[in-house]
Image (tube, rainbow, N blue to C red; front, top):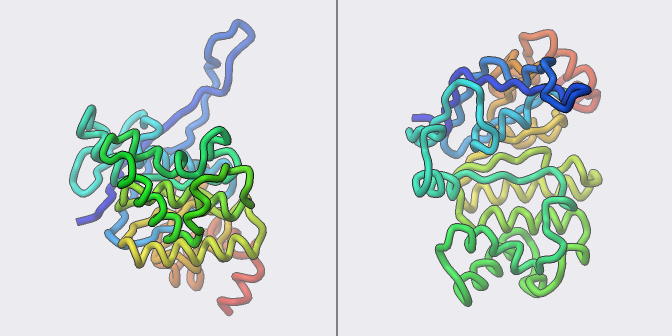
Amino acid sequence: MSLVQAENLVKTFALGQNAFGTASKNRVQAVNNVSLSIEPGETVGLVGESGSGKSTLGRMLLRLIEPDSGSVHFDGRDVLAASGADLRRLRRDMQIIFQDPYGSLDPRMTVEQVVCEPMAIHGSECGSVQRSRAAEMLRAVGLDESALHRYPHEFSGGQRQRIGMARVLMLRPRFIVADEPVSALDVSVGAQIVNLLRQLQREFQLTYLLISHSLPVVRYLADRIAVMKHGELVEVGTTEQIVNAPRHEYTRALLAATPELEAAST
């Protein structure tokens, strides 16, 4: 059974407000009838140009955005029907790594407070146990526990992304949406984070949806690739099939726009 199963997801957004301050009648369909399954332990890469609906789809899987229609199931449980304690239990298993390591961490909090925040929200542990878990997760992402008493602004972008990853791991999730996790970092630091994602997947038995506009990153990490254009999935296949024998013209155009990937596949 798939760990994550989405069926016929649809999401439409209003384009701002009109001159009278009410919602505009002009609307854009961010996600249009998308179905996607993700198996336990798998990494699915979701690629496409900016504005293709990738982040909206990822957030709907976690129910951070409510779809207009469709269904999402996690390990057989209906995510969209869950409420109260059931929804909180689901959220422990389903987490997100954000794109911006600068904006996703509260600058007023110490690293200890940042990393422990998920535990406090879910009320599962406190005090020395919580602090010990935070130190363990920092070590897992390659940071020393001495970071606990410092503030996010004291760290580089790559280190901040590691702090965000430690925060995500605190609840021991099973499924993580990694939304452009290296796009705000320089190439060398981004490569370190990509390798860390792979290492953490093995160590914690994680399942990923990796959202990225970078085909080399996705090719390195993903078992399968889903290609999104204008809110629709135009092609889904194994990484080898997508890179070496793409069926859709849009996929071929994405490959052609990434010379280093095209060269590597020939």
